[in-house]
Length: 164
Image (cartoon, rainbow, N blue to C red):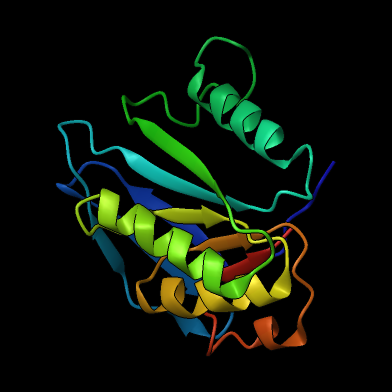
């Protein structure tokens, strides 16, 4: 069992025309991040940034996302059973901060300039720092499975960064 430790709590409001995320930290309330979405069901866009040396990473990511989207498998069936669509893709970032940031920006570009609603990854600290800087400015939560750099513990500089 994996436990996650985050400097914030995340809640989504899927009844509006945009997905509003309210982030509450131990130091107070962050500003709301209102990320516009497209489509009638307001799909939630998740980007996985994984590296090629993490052999089971892409497979685990895809299996987990598929399980969340299957409302009849007995595995957290109540998470998105309100008609919300969850779309995801993963990109290889090879533990390279420049490549990771490029993959994040390419996702935005292909998504009509709209950032993802969340990022899962990067595994390596250098990549997590690069993506966390931009994702944090856009109010996009990032969850990293292994980044250990002390710098990422600065909740003022990386307010939307969490570790597993």
